[in-house]
Length: 116
Image 1 (cartoon, rainbow, N blue to C red):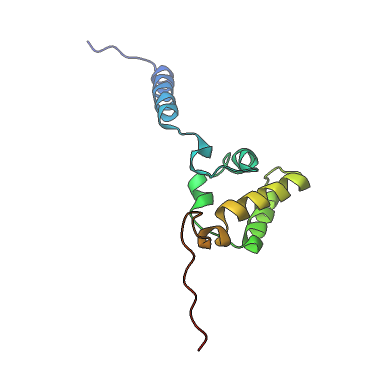
Image 2 (image 1 turned 120 degrees about the vertical axis):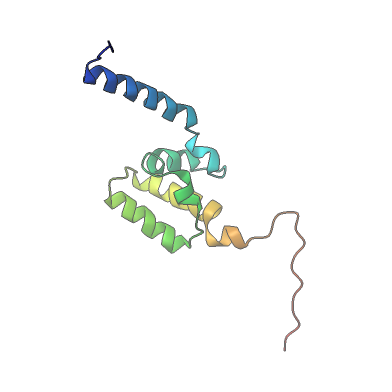
């Protein structure tokens, strides 16, 4: 004769197993974010709702990052005005369009073209 367990007990056991499995695979949200002043603020304010890859996947202009921050603040992100400035500076410096275009520190400068 099979043993019957109450459904709530089975659901609770399944939730424990699935919850433990989710924590094992979780990674540090700051792992994908470049080092720099402001990274801790981005981790606190942004990665509580978003995976870091949603932040790092696209380079943006300073105006675009400012728009994104403003939109997130309207959606409930909690930052003081000073923290907003620090997050903007971090994102522009580390994940901005200019950061992507800047040559690596050890790279030789690109040759200039003669005027036409």
